[in-house]
Length: 439
Image (cartoon, rainbow, N blue to C red):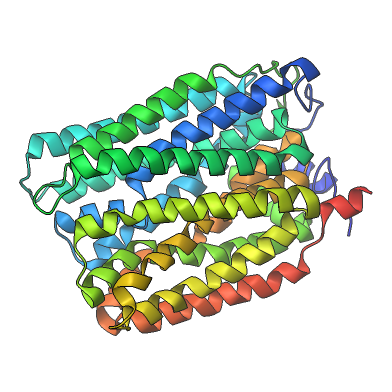
C-alpha cells in the first residue's frame, strides 16, 4: 500500500483552493531536540495532573448527577466532549497551518481551558453546597467551552509533535508523558483527595480549582519550546471550505478512510463513559466519594498501558498497537456488566473496569500518531481535524444512549456498543503499515 506524503490527491488540493508550499523545517535542529522533548513531556505531565481531577468517566458525570438531572442530561457530556474535539479543529485546520509559531496557539488554548475550570470552581464556591436550577446549564456551558478549546489544543499539540519530535521518538514520548504523568497525577490525587472528599463533604470547588491551576501552569510551560518559525505558509486561492477539504481527504486517501471508519466505531465507547459510574452506584450501591477514588485506579491503568505500548509502537508501529488497544477496549463493557451483576465480586472487582479504561487516552494518542505517519507535516492539521470529526460522529447519539439506559437498562446498551467495538478491531486488519511502505 502506498502512502502519499505530500497530498491525498492533486485534485483534492485544487478543489479545496489550497496551494501547498514547502514549510520549514520538518524537525527541530539537533541542539534543540532534547529540550523540546523534555518541554513537551513536562507540558503533558502537568496537564495529566490537572486532568485526573476531572476524569470524564467518573468526576464530571458524578458532579452533574449531584446537582440533578436525568440520564439523557448525563448523556450530553460525551456529545459536548466530542463536538469540541471535532468541529472546532476542522474549522481551525487551515488557520493552524498558517500560524508561524504553534507554541503560542498551544499556550493560548491551554489558558482558555484553565479559565473554564477556574470559573467552575468559583461557581461551586458561590453555591456553598446548595443546588440551584440554573447550575446544570452553567455547568454544561463551561464544559462545552472547555472541550472546544481542548479539541483545538489536542490538534495543536499533535501538530507541534509532528513538527518537533521525530517519528521514531513518538512512542518514547507517549511512554514518558503518560507514564510519568499518570504516576505524578496519582501521587498528587492520593494526597489531596483525602482532604477534599469524605462521607460528609465533597469539595468540588477545590477539585476544579486545582485542575484550572494546573492547566494554567501547563500553558506557560508551552512557551519554553524552541520552535523555529514557519517562513512559507499556505497561499489561499479560494475561500476556506474546511468540511469540503475534510471530505475530499477521506475520498482520496483510502487508508485514512479505513482509519476514519475504525475511529468512528471506537468513538462509540466514549458514549458509555458517563454511565460506568452510574452503573456502579445503582447496581452496587457505591457512594460518590468511593467512586471518585477510582480515578487513581484509572490513571494506574494509563501508566501501565503506556509502559507496554509506547516501546511497542516504536518497535512495531502504531497499527499493531491499535489492534491490541481496540481488542481490550471492546471487552470493557462486558467486564463492567459482569461485575455489576455479581453480588460476590462486584464491589471488589469493579475497579478493574476503570483500570482498563485507562487505556482510552493512550488509544487516542495512538490514532493521532498513526495519522501523523500517513501524511506530510503540512497536512497534519487537516488530517488530525478530520480524524477528530470521525471520532466524534457517534457522540451525536449520546443523549439518546442516555435515554435508552433509562428505558432499556444498561445491558442492551452496553452489549450493543461492545459489538461495534469488536467490529472496529476487525477492521484494523484493513490498515496499511506506513513504516513498511517507507522501507
